[in-house]
Length: 535
Image (cartoon, rainbow, N blue to C red; front, side, top):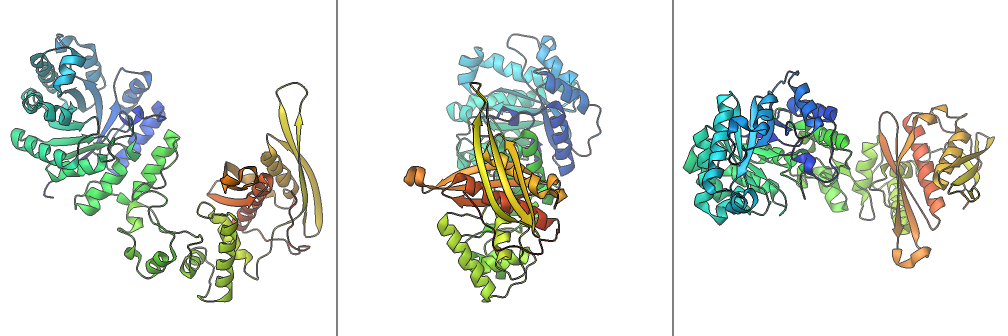
């Protein structure tokens, strides 16, 4: 690599065309500011005039000072057979007052003849006139050659002629778009080289991931000389998405020696931030920044990582703002347990009776249907419960759940009664809820609140049910995962039973005990035997 590469983010425009992705005007401003701080060169804000949110975004963006990025408005060529000066869409592009304007034109004869319904000559004039007019108004102009690779493979001369029209109009960039996402990396590289030699002005690449090659195609184009990569955070986009910037950025910077951002260690933070505003679940298996990107499960792998981290890690996780995770399962060996205990600040000796007891207990529970990969809080409690110093926070004596329908109305409610004791003090409570778990949670909190008043600061965020051995039908075991949180963190717990209420109770109790332990609350001084549970 002997050339620099600019990053062009289109999350706020192309990304919002993805199913389930939606941002408010404020969301778009916050994301743009985050991208600016991260070091992205161009931020495409949307299509001015197309909807009120984009109008509001450009109005607000014009008032702000941007540290690094240039804001770009997006649009299309002038309409066919319409003077560019009279096209209202072109007027809205200029009215956005952005330093950069990106517009697209047709590269594929199929689109020119059958979609636009015009001639090749008029299509080229539309591209040329639009470029010239925007340049005359002092804008940096980026021409997006839509369907360029498909158009090139269909009619090479026609596709190149559309780029020539943009160059003649004074375009600053020619961006080659794999709009259908069906081109292979070797084709992308070869065609990029042709364009580089033919036109001699900066070339960019815009890829989609329909063949799972969005990032690979972008990198192939960069290797062939492209100096701008367009993409979206987390790969949001129409159909299966766009080139994923959270993958292409570290590949450029770490694998291809091309610095593109100053603070790569903020990459995961950026990814999570955008996911949160989009209200989308984070892709745990995303390269570099996913929760499992540096997670190790097999005992032999963990043993190797414990000795030399890069033996099973291609980069250091902290470089991209991630961290190493040691998973525990039936595949675990002593190394998993020791490293996990070390993470938790619990000193254990290899080969010691406590380690062997923890490992055996883990394997016994997984045989019953437990999984701890998404329930690290339950696993920490498992470790501590094998230590002589462990004391529970309360003792359960009994619980009951009842169901009630209110007459003929479509209204149903559940009630739960819970009897617990803390240091010999008994508490018997009743609470209603929308379902048995909600009712149990309310009754248990009510019972424990006088002993542990901070319990109101935690809440249940998510509740998932999985069937273990589903071939057994209604006789199968149920695995319940509960995600809880407070103002500082979130944690997962797990419970398994043939009875879904019992499984939920076990996960719920773990969640509360873990919360109290994290807060440094002193456990009960005395317990009347082991904690019992009642179906």
